[in-house]
Image 1 (spheres, rainbow, N blue to C red):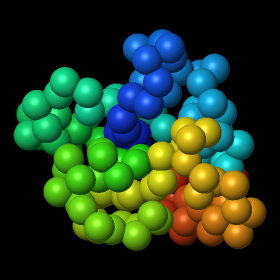
Image 2 (image 1 turned 135 degrees about the vertical axis):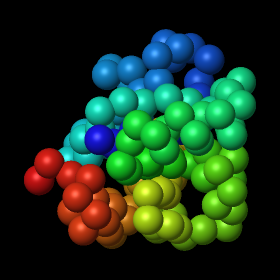
Image 3 (image 1 turned 180 degrees about the horizontal axis):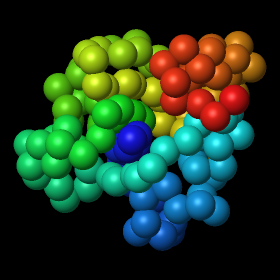
Length: 120
């Protein structure tokens, strides 16, 4: 089972993390990513959240620098696997220009396939 953990990037967007109609969700789905659940770090006790996620999920994908830093993975590469259970990806928000480069998108697709985070 896979869980995405991110940060809320827009007050106007629904409180549901990665709402199916959000641009972030659409972007991740467009590159073939799939997940079973999603949550955000806003107002969460990170130690309790980490314990809960590690009991329940085999793979935890941290999207964005704030989410990665909250879990202790600061200054890691945009597409990386800092340990056996955690993966780090750039936040899929439209505000993140990393996604504007086609080479980055191709690299993200390869990363998802390599780590079995993709349906493709």
